[in-house]
Every structure is written in C-alpha cells, then in structure tokens.
Length: 100
Image (cartoon, rainbow, N blue to C red):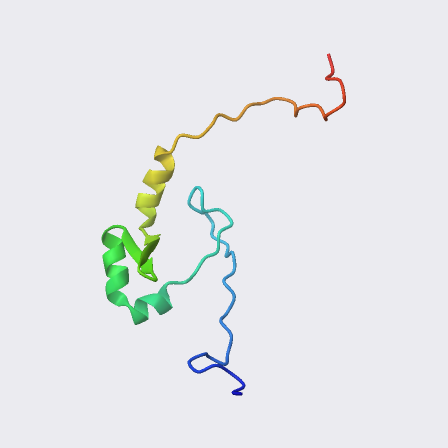
C-alpha cells in the first residue's frame, strides 16, 4: 500500500490564524483572516469580479459560499435588526427565591 494517497500533498497547509487588524469590520471580529495574494495570483479574474459585487461559489454542484466586498458586508450588517440589549440582573437559579 502506498504511503500517501495519489494527488495529496506531502506538506501541510499553513494554519489560518485569527489575524489582528486595527479596525475589524463589524460582525467579523475574531474571525480568521486570509491574505488574498495567493488567490489573486492564481485566479485574478475571480478577485476582479468580486470587487464589483458578490460572487457565489459552488461546491459539489451546490451553492456553498459567497465572496463579497467589505462595503457590501457593512451595508448588510447595518441593515439587520438586532434585539435590544437589556440591562438587568441574570435570572435566579432554579430552586432559589428571587431577591426582593
């Protein structure tokens, strides 16, 4: 039996770190960051197209991902209604009486 499968690379991918940016876009805080230089070098037309608007990517014949410019993400994020933040004490533990 072969020590590795045909078509598989012997070296491992670099991990995708969370990255640190000075002013992360709202809703994207703490998410992994990926430098697009490698993607842009391999598929420049994909990046050019994504600059103009969303690009829907498929996987196994199904729509799976959307690549969209950050300005569109920000507009989408600001348009979503969020529940209000209530300033209140947490509920009492089960079996205990609430304080009066």
